[in-house]
Image (cartoon, rainbow, N blue to C red; front, side, top):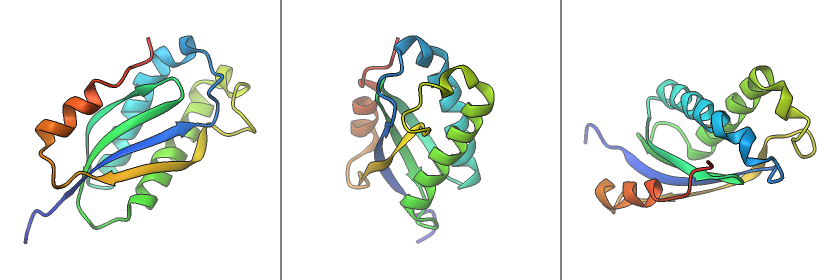
Length: 128
């Protein structure tokens, strides 16, 4: 079957929940650009991104060519490295010198229509 793809709803946590919301106001927008670039490199599509000050939700439409764990590791690694360069002012707030927790949650939502899943991700609270 050509064009097979899976949709995953992913959540991952910042390892630094004590970072003040004001630091994430513009940074969350930068993260979106970084996530989109990684998704493009993986030939996946970032359908929706949202979250709160301590975690982020991603809805990713992705062909089964790459493992979810390699994509998540790339999303975290690239964003962490670039934020260190672009935002050295928040690096001192990282917990144990890392931005992301090593954990994540990914659930296939391939059986549910995107019209159902996307509003769920959209309704997650975005840091102000």
